[in-house]
Amino acid sequence: MTRRMAVEALHAALDDARARLLALSSALPDAVPCLPIINPPRWEVGHVAWFAERWCLRRRPDGGIAPPWFMDAVDGWYDSGRVEHDLRWRLALPDPAATRAYLAGVLDAVHAGLHERARNGETGDEDLYFFLLALYHEDMHCEALHYTLQTLGAPAPPDHGAKRSPPPSGEGGELRFPGGTVEIGARPRAGFVFDNEKWAHACELQPFAIDRRPASNGEFAAFVDDGGYARGSLWSEEGLQWLRESGLSAPCYWRRGSGGWERRVFDTWLPLSPDEPVLHVTAHEAEAWCRWAGRRLPTEAEWECAAKSFGPAFNPWGHVWQWTASAFAPYPGFAPDPYEDYSRPWFHTHRAVRGGSFATPERLLDPVFRNFYQPQRSDIFIGFRSARSL
Image (cartoon, rainbow, N blue to C red):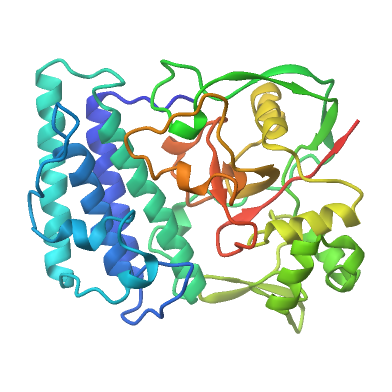
């Protein structure tokens, strides 16, 4: 896939993202507890508008930054690089009506700026870069609001029923790669590219096999029922520490009901569907399952190689993010893009994650797309597929 849009399609995508943001934010409860894995909803919504204003409207030709257009204090409220997470909960933010007005004003100005680019014939990848960056940033925050709704046990978002449903488990088994030199990363002039995807480079892989599909609920339940959470030999040192601190004996959002395992989906407990991909497991749980099954997590280079090489036999996305064995690290020759905080602060402390979930807009998806989370995170819509060396 290529992240490239004509101007009219970009206008429509910006409106689509905004409609999703407003619907999701309206679904949040009035009172939200201060938790380290979520942002205050009003801050998150205002931050989305600030980001678009900052990168689409206030960048000067000389690379400098103009003053805010709409509200004088926005940089002190919404700049995620300057406003630490705990402080976001204590700020005297604009009220909901003022926040919505800020959103609307920025979006109107972004549309006007995009129209001006089109009138000037400035429609190439570089011309539209910051408009696409703002779009994808808003898409990512929409997905984060899905995580917030799930974490809080709130009702499902209004459009949940229309999203990509869990794929059938399909053909099991594995795909085999004979090893050799492969290309990993994005090529120049490939449409919009995030800085951590730059640039394509050769990578030598040893022969490996990788699952055709992510691990299923039924496969993970077999590990749980076999006492997997009580068998220390299956867990890394980090995993054992996480296990002691969490006190879990099954994935979060699982419980035993009268008819067997159940899983909480937003505010509703449903019977566990054995054929759906397992969701909400940490990297530690995924690795323990792999040891129990005599397998391992793929590296992100193996994952990308399979996504590019095997076509429809390897469904890389559609429902669940997937852990890899690789630390999130820069590619050779990495240099940050103007939004320097997108990748660089998270290198070597986060785990590389691949694929995409049901809450990820399809316009973001690409085999080279790299996401990144700390290995103890399970609030995201994440699972895994396993691999082995040949």
